[in-house]
Length: 186
Image (cartoon, rainbow, N blue to C red; front, side):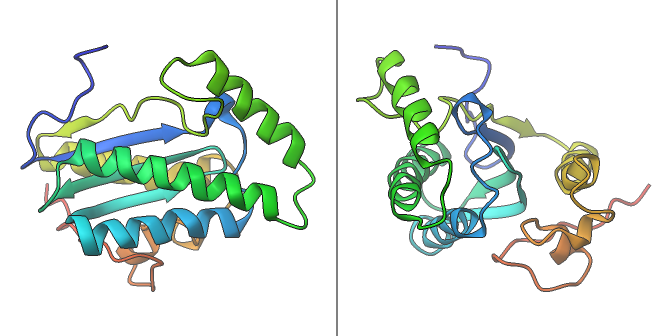
């Protein structure tokens, strides 16, 4: 296992990215994105999960996170395990999911190929945590997260994307509680 990407210091903030296997565009349905939000809210209430920035794209998630409770690697492991089960059930039960068989087949195929899973894998194995060691890096990562939907052509302005903390930073109501960081003063 790589030693480059680890949560080394639990007192620090981290930029993380995690993706659906094979970069499947799972999160084109709000129902699926809401499963992620509900999981984060649970982790915030019960595990000390801190969110400073986030964005759910169609096939992946970017976040800036910290913890005042459980270890970050434990929070991420539990959250990914829970959402994998919940999202699989949502795919199976969604009445309008035309891609159901294909997505489940791809996830089952990925699970069979990975010795750490049993017949099913929704998330790619890693989170690639990158420690945030100063405010410039923090703001660079926040800008990157918030501009993802703009670069992808989903919206014209970051604050227009509902499933992102950009809304909070522009003074609009967000979908999950976050900890706002101070503006960067040059």
